[in-house]
Length: 204
Image (cartoon, rainbow, N blue to C red; front, side, top):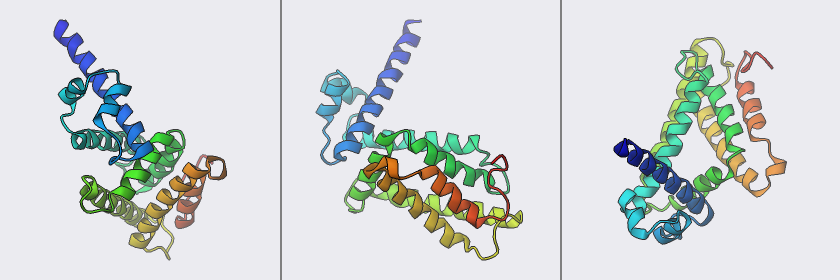
């Protein structure tokens, strides 16, 4: 019982550290954030923080992995395992809707992706792989939609995948600057619907 309680406490502390790092990285960037600041926010010692994350790079990896895991689960709930691609496209709308509720996450990715344009940045390779994965996955979903007879004839899958990726990122930045002026989910939904010949959400 003591071991189990210790494990639960340790996991909760780790999650708190990741949440604090997410907020700080999003506010000041990876380069400007310090491990001492994160430790202070979590009310633990610098040594206590190092027990869970020995380096700032390892903490950043945990932050990004946590977000990716949550996103994959959101896409699964929208039926991304289906064969017609529609679940993935619905998942993009759901993700845009969720992002409008978690400004810290949007700020994190806006700041880190800009910093990571520098090849020396520790997240550079992560973001290169991430964008390649997103474009590839979106293009596959569009090809699956075409095979199912759902995609408009004029759509080039690879080009549309790059455009949708850019749309998502551009909307997020505009939303950060002026949340009231941008409906991310509706804009993404409308653009995806323009690519289809069937309703993206039949309930609408």
